[in-house]
Length: 142
Image (cartoon, rainbow, N blue to C red; front, top):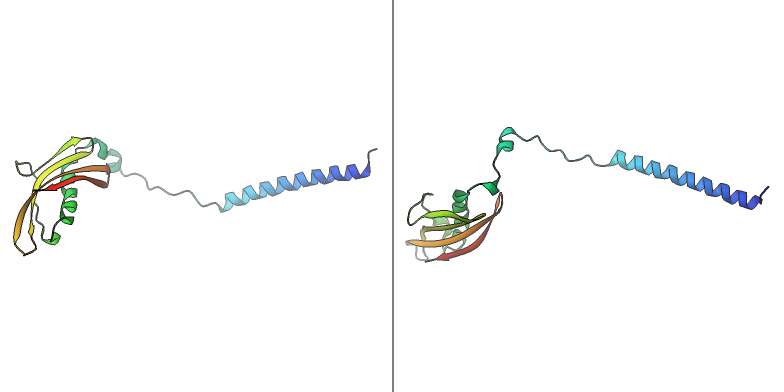
């Protein structure tokens, strides 16, 4: 027979291991029970599944209108700004120059400091960085 102290220490070690395992299993069960549910994603609509990615489109029209916001920020009276309709002509056009980069040449009619309506030509380049965000690359006025 072995030493009674060694047997007690051995028994105590086994009890500690069993308690550790039971507590560990309890902790795992408890965290699973109270874990937040995974986020729900609504099912994609048929039109969304068939939608062409912005990366594969010519977004010249959108680039034209997004550049308006940057032009307005440079005007003395942005609320009076009037832009021509989107079309292609010698004084008003937007074209894709690189992947996701668009160049616009157009004009804006707006009031100057004295309240007179003035026509200002502008040249701008804008880049689409994702489906809903655009970045101004350059903007010059003549």
